[in-house]
Length: 65
Image 1 (tube, helix red, strand yellow):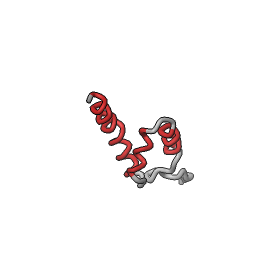
Image 2 (image 1 turned 120 degrees about the horizontal axis):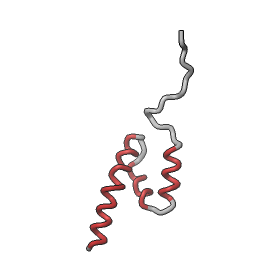
Image 3 (image 1 turned 90 degrees about the vertical axis):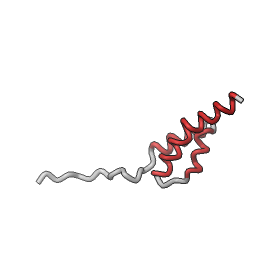
Image 4 (image 1 turned 45 degrees about the vertical axis):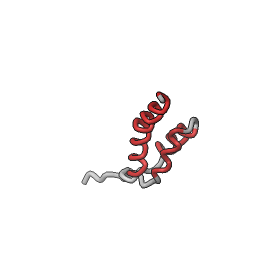
């Protein structure tokens, strides 16, 4: 029974924030399942960190005049 409670706590503490981030990025919330698979979660995190985010601006030269 305690392992079931531990699983539910892990889903809430890890799954919900990952789900929210993925939906804000326009990705399927089903990718949250990857956060619970060992090694795949690290690879997914690296790929996500280098992806283009919707609110990210491209660097353009700023004119001073």
